[in-house]
Image (cartoon, rainbow, N blue to C red; front, side, top):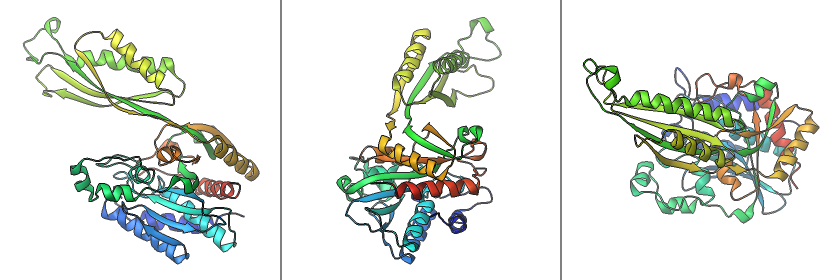
Length: 387
């Protein structure tokens, strides 16, 4: 039994029209475009005869009953980054819809119910990323009143969205890799073992702003020059430690920021991702030791633990892939997903398909339809093997 790739492709292209721009797709968290996409999905659920609803925070669900009250949740998200692509998130939601439609038209009932989920605001916003799935898992215990107002929700709404984890058998998500490992190794399927943690530090480098024309080079205290020492040492350490560790400095703010003024201050953010925070701690400790001057100030701003995914789910996915005779790679995810909060409350598995050239969060985001078909078939066959 296999999914109908033409039907899945049609649905993906149809959803892709919602929020479509000349370049890319914008269905930003909590926007009218995201709400329109969620409504489109619920209408599809209703057409299939599924029990469907949009919960108190905007998550969309469709339920296909099984032989017990326990349920398997499958899905992802329909929101995008500004000028994003067709596949990020939407693949997981619409492949899940296709899987349930395939089960239904073949009159197959599983030991467990299947809940297709489209989680709201995965890509972030005022309330942070993976918002909808964090509401479902009860992870959000408090939210500033101004943030509640900005997204039009109350803490009561957020608390009412929590699902009873005792009723959840497991969670399964299909997603594009958003990197170039699978394409580089010519593997159509990735089986995810864990989702890397995120460790960020705001760094302030102090110097002395002064006239750029009258101050000799040997009498300058240039904050930008000092920042280059930090940047080079940071990347050297990341490469030296290696493994799954990646590091990025993606923002740089120079003050006062004028062509004829020596930079008096530089603010930047260091981001590191790894399954092991001892590596990221080592980086920061080494930087502090090498750059011992009082002119370098480090402030931890994010320490978001990674998660290890369920061994049972990994094994079940692997069996499904082997039965389908697809080449695959066992790997970790460097990006965060709804699978992250879900893994904290229920056994969780994740399936990747390749991203062409490793590009995502871009109008150029693309995946091959043959890989989409394979990923959806792995999702279907994994469901059939969950005991």
